[in-house]
Length: 113
Length: 112
Image (cartoon, rainbow over the protein chains, first blue to last red):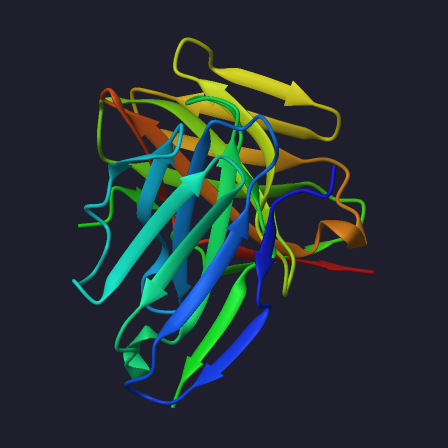
């Protein structure tokens, strides 16, 4: 198993541009999570899905952020328009169930200039 | 308000000695706790977990202790190895909410 796959690994974009981060979870994992890591706030849960359905998006900071999971093998996190304060490492994770340990992807380092 | 606190940003331990990483929580409804390890440029990886019905869980060199009355848990690594150098995150869940609440992490440095 290749694990949780995220793309791109690094993204540098100008303020105001749209950014799309991608995630392929581990096959068979019913839960998918999007996290953001910053120096100031540590790891923050943005949103999570169960069986492709968004369950809790209370961590999404603003309407500029949106996430989709069109099928069990793919999810996107979109920021439109992006701002410098969105610069962070964004992690996707998947899990087979509610109490299992997550498997994280390697993250996408986003820099908005 | 931080519900899960790792008060030591970093910890330096001699190779072969015991590493003890601490974590405190404030929400008494938390009933499941996990430790993750993170290397630079990689995602966190699951290390060990403990349910609130237990006070100790052991996996090889790693042992997690839970003191519910003190709302405190600790991760012991014995003996510490250079490959253990990483950032360790404590996380908690419970109260019928699957959202994990994360600590800020502790950077462990194992000195040769």
